[in-house]
Image 1 (tube, rainbow, N blue to C red):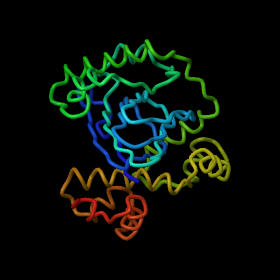
Image 2 (spheres, one colour):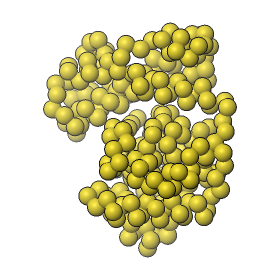
Image 3 (cartoon, rainbow, N blue to C red):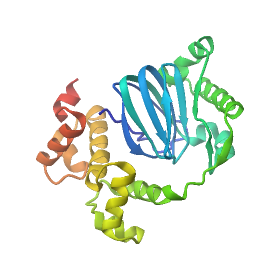
Length: 256
């Protein structure tokens, strides 16, 4: 599984671009927008419990704080642009507390070919990128209805994911989460398993290893330092979890 996450945390002038092969991602949320284009293969996007199959050339726009995940159905190669809500502020105001009925769309090749560079390749020209993003926002508003984002069954899931994403670098236990939310520990454990199909420990490890992968690629820090920075008490635990999730060792990941 190849996982990525946005670490600029809403810098109004920041854009993060990714080109990922054999792409998949566990359920997560963030305050940024996420624009993804499937270049090759097949992908299943899940947004707040709704499944959207994607074919090559399809794009999807994830709104802030929508719980989303991706399942690789075969050879999924993707381009991803993660950007701050401040980048398309007017659209952000229009879509606050709302959801797109269908966030998946397709653009004709001549139009997309002109925009691809600024959306997914070159982030050094923010005005060009912003104009392309506003074009996509207008296109989506024409193609898809906006509905109130009412999902009572996922309210608790939002709270769980937000709390884990805010505290995964600390010593975080299931009991800590349960006390914070005011629920029984076993109820929270079963809830996470039934909604995310993984355990609480696996959820925390996904976030820690995701952050570790980011540090391995963007810093020269020793692997041992990264292990402790990610919330692990030993290098051995970090190495074991990293290999389970990324299917390679931290050193192999850094060197590829």
